[in-house]
Length: 141
Image (cartoon, rainbow, N blue to C red; front, side, top):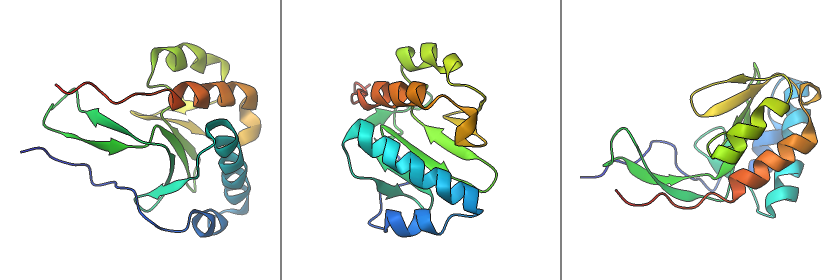
C-alpha cells in the first residue's frame, strides 16, 4: 500500500497567508517572492499544508521507500519567522550547479534557507526557479 505525504495542497487564501506573515520584513520578502515566482512560472500559487506557497506540482516516488509517493510542488517558498525557506531550486542537476551563485544561504534537506532577499542575487533566483519549473514526474519505480 502506497503512503502519501502529510503536506497536501489546500484551497486556503495565499494572499491572506502572506499578508499575515511576521515579522514585517518576512511579510515584505514573502510578497516579493510571490511576485517573482508568479513572474517566472506564470502559475498561481497554492498553499500546501499550513505554510508552503507552492507553484505547479509533480508526482514523486521516494528514493528511500518506493511505496512512498505523491504530489509535491515543483517549486515554492515559506516565509518562516527565522528565515525564508525556498523549495525545489536545488533538486535538479542544473539547479544544484547554479546554486553556489545565489549568494548567502544555508541548506536544509529539501530546501534553501535565506535570511533576507537582499542576501541573494534575484536574477540567479529567477534562473533557479525556471530550472525547478521544468521538473517532470518521477518515473514510477
